[in-house]
Image (cartoon, rainbow, N blue to C red; front, side, top):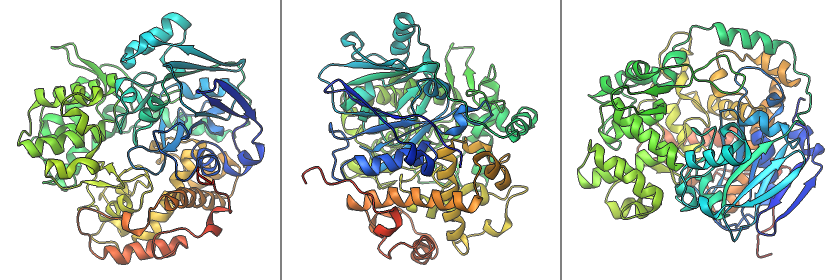
Amino acid sequence: MKHSWGPLCSIDVGDRTVETEDIDDVLESYVGGRALGTKLAHERIPFDVDPLGADNRLFFATGPLQHSTMSFTGRTSATTVSPLTDGLLSSNAGGFVSRNFTGTGYSAVEITGASDDLVVVHVTDDGVEFEAVPDLEGATVPETCEYLEDEHDLGPEHTAVIGPAGENEVRFASVMTSEERAFGRGGLGAVLGSKNVKAITFDGDSTREVEIPAVQMEIHGEAAQADHPMKAQGTTSVAEYANMVEALSSYYFEDLSFEGIDGISGDRVEEKKYKKGTCSSCAFACKLPTRDEESGLETEGPEFETLMAFGSNSGVDDIVDVMQSNKLCDVYGLDTISTGDTIAAYLKSEDEFGNVDLIHDLVEQIAHREGVGDTLAEGVDRIHDDLGVENWSVKGMEFAAHDGRTLNGQGLAFATSNRGADHMYAEFYPYEYPLVGEEDAFQKEGLEGKPPKLVELENLNAVKDSAIFCKFSRDFLTEERIETLLDADYDDLLALGGEVVAMERHFNNQRGFDRGDDRLPYELPDFEQGLEEYYAERGWNDDGTVPDTKVGGGSAAPADD
């Protein structure tokens, strides 16, 4: 099985100590990326850890395919205990940092402890340096990136940075890389902020050669030549279609379609796109550098999820207004989905849908925890009673788009996801939109026949997040190609993915998660039966807990033991 190479670099930012550890035996079994981060977290993070405490650990890792130059591989994974969901969570980001990460020679970097001073941690193949940066307190993501480039000749492609939101421990703060790409969901930025780490940089020339089969060039060529709507509109290419089939959440989830869709559609995004955008080594180029000529506003995006959260869900029908919301989130280091949904909850409570000036003010207030922003920075799950609105979250995470009330398999996927209400954990929704070439068996109401497919998709995505493949490679990565690239049997890889999902669930079980957390704020046909079938397919207990035998017996001891 192909896997990452190099030791674990463990950095205690409180004690200013650095240790390296040979983890070849773990790499041989767990590939890299999310699987590696999950295994290390399961063994090294106390089950009862405070997500914002010094004992929490944040793991960055790449996979074997970051040692190649194949399209769809410009990604890096990060794993920690989330201050938003209170569970173990992995997030991955695109951009250009992954190749510079492999250049350090490490397969994984662990950040633990808490610094007394605001610091930048510089990780290279020559070692680790700590730099006190008191002048960067409160600096935005672009300001921090400018400092690192001016003072250290390290461009944004070398960095993982937090903005004011992370410093202020906003529970859905992002870690930003390449300035505008995000480790978005779950509040990883708050974890770095709690450790007083403003940025981590990666640099070196110690990338190990990993032999990748020639099929990588076939995939690269097909990515370059493909005539695909995402090349022009990114994920927003689905916006009008989702609206037509009533799968577009609107007005804080009151409606399933939005009458103002024309003003925020993929066509409007494409009109603002002024150049190609991509991730490292990728010829697919689906990113969205956008510019409004009248105002001079430039940003990257918005993607479809942001159109939902700051557009339809907030009652906003002008793409420039959504672009501005997207820009502010990137500047301050915030997850656009959780930020937009939380603001939408506030707009509902105040009957202020569509108030763009208020929306933009609230983004800044959240990032700085000022005024009502201090309350909203806690996220919907913790504040919905105070606002007098429904709790539109799962396991503490605000909902992504592709509404499960229409796409019922995706609804079940939101409920079972260890990350919470996140659409990328399983990606069931493409199978339920009646698009050409998809499977008719899943394009129907209800959950009949869907739980086994859900298990397969969750397992497959765990493999992709470990290799690491971009999820948008789905049209190019056949089972045979995945086997060839990773030099492993496809069923064995799915079994590994299942173990990753089980380790996440097992960790969360020790923190009190069970069947009661696999819940939705709406009803689905035969939901309880579908949930039971899902557990049975996985070999889990009826209460949503994982038998110890499913995770190889490894566990971390509680902190007070």
